[in-house]
Amino acid sequence: MATYPLRAISSGRMFARHSDGTVDEVLSDDSGGAKTTLNTAIAGERNTSSATNSYLDTRSVANAVLLSGTSAVTIGASAAANDRHLQGIMIGTALAGTLTIAGFEDSDAAAASMILPIGTVAGYLDFHDALNSAGALTMTLSAAGDDNDVMVFWRAV
Image (tube, helix red, strand yellow):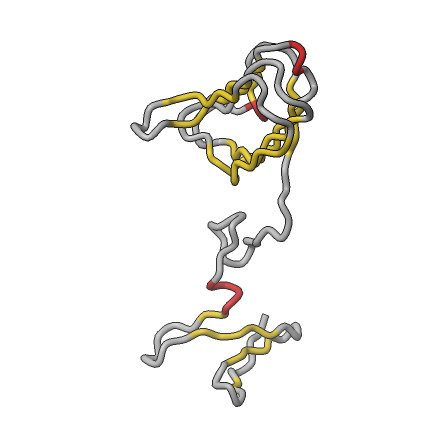
């Protein structure tokens, strides 16, 4: 794609118009160094290794799994540390048993589990895309009475 010469507008901002009609704001330094367009200078949060093919999320994308049974459930086939983001947990009614969440580390960098106690109230618990830094992301319900009442929202790295 051909790029036409840069044009300054009254605000002092510079733009480049490409042969396909697109326009990019141009960033440069005053020393004559390399110039780059704004859309290639900002890498998105997804596919960050590519300045031209990355993007920012405008909505929260998640996979969901409904927990059932009292055996440990590996979330999203998590196999090792740093392969899943835990976005949140929706609890339908107060827990009859406990919910154990494994795959995170404690403040001493040791693998540890978080245990939500009996009676944890219904609602949404936001985990802010927490990365399972200490092993596979697994969850275990202790009471069959909680079957299909806990939904886990997650995404792969």
